[in-house]
Image (tube, rainbow, N blue to C red):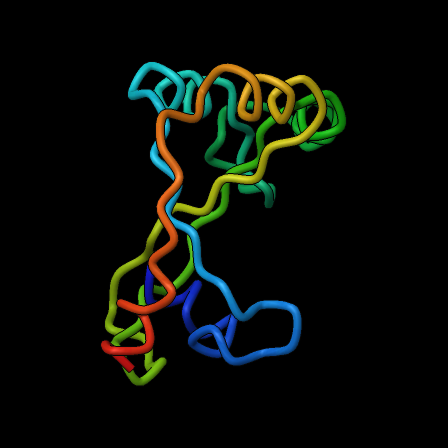
Length: 113
């Protein structure tokens, strides 16, 4: 989520994290990312064995986890936000095919803080 990313980068004040970029991707790309994601932690209700899940995680290009959503002060607010991590060929597609627009929003971030 936006607020979690701001927490992680210290609202654009941490060393080597002084710029914040908003990256727009194609809708179809987001759908593909979600479609091929594998949940990052095993739960018995996934409908597969833990060994099968481990194999899927090992081979996946996308991992999914649900993190607590936070308010502007960094406190959890009782719901979760999806976090998707990409690697391998998914990164290549992200860089070369999926990005539509990159906007530097650093000034807006500093105003919000």
